[in-house]
Image (cartoon, rainbow, N blue to C red; front, side):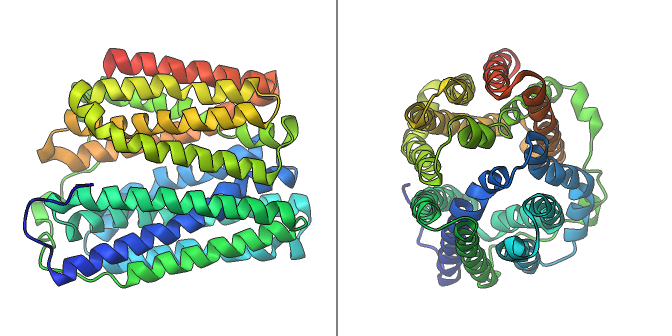
Amino acid sequence: MDTPSSSAPSPCLRSNFGYLYGDIFWYGVLAGSTVAFLNVYATRLGATSFQIGLLTAGPAVTNLLISLPAARWLERRSLIRATFLSSVWQRVGYLPLIVLPWVLSASGSVWALELIILLMSVPGTLLAISFNAMFAKIVPPEWRGHVVGRRNALLALSIIATSLLCGQLLDRIPFPLNYQVVFGVGVIGAALSSYYLSRIRASLVLSPPARKSERDKPLLRLDLLRGPFGPLLAVYLLFYTFQQVPLPIFPLVWVRELRLSDGEISLGNALFYISMLLASMIVGPISARSGHRRVLILGALFYGSYPLFIGLAQDAALFWVASLIGGVAWALASAGLVNRLMERVPPDDLPAHMALHNLALNLGMLGGSLIGPALGDALGLREALWIGAGLRLLSGILLGLWG
């Protein structure tokens, strides 16, 4: 994470960088607590694979429906203020999770979770769009790699520490109070993350507002699919779909097949992020030597090992091995996905291409979230994981052909 060779950032930029670091650190607390254990909590309440899948499918549908209108709505508004407010409205939804066990039965709590996550996805979509646009405006291009690198490192370290802490809390405190405490930790992380977003200020590096002619351009350009971007987007769609297939099955296998404790699950999460963090440090040199395409293919091929090993596991040992390998694979695949996409997208027509990419991402999340539970119900949980592993391997092969 070398600093740029240009002059030091202005005081305003330096302050904003610090706030961005504070934001991501405390978001890591939220991600390592509430977000990491939400599916496990639903599973321990008795949720079915279909209900676990809905926790992802519902937000994906919302994103598909409102992403483009939300992007247009944000064009004439302060991105900094929109980012802060949407973060508050999205994250206030974590508060009711703390009191659910006091007011609803186990089955009622599962459906309440579904509704809460669905409602949170509306401001969550605004937050995702506004934050990315705000980041591009307040961080000069020559500093973005530096800031992103530090944010990624802070995120991984925060998730690792929080996940390990929450695993101990979950093992030592009786159910369901243990999850209420963990969700309380998540609320603290969410609140402090939003606080740091509220401290960000505009600086002179803000890009000028889009000209009217640019705003009038349609963001959904289906004509782009007829060119070389079409096959690339198709294989990305398949990758996102196949990646998602085993995800709703994982917590069911951890809890019902392997009978893992929350501490054992938290250690697996920590190992995943430790290996991802370490692997991320060498992705740059590997990409420079071998190219982004080869890194993407390698990561995608190895990413299938995670559901394969989980499907073969009989106890926590192979689960932990899968977590270590999966973190390395995801570090390669995620970096390759972004870098390869940027290689194939014309820099002067980025918004239209990224809008189609966002559409493919959410279609894949939706499709995979529904396919996985259906396979689990029809064939069995372990069999569904093995099929998911095969599909991930297939997506790596297809990326090699058309990526």
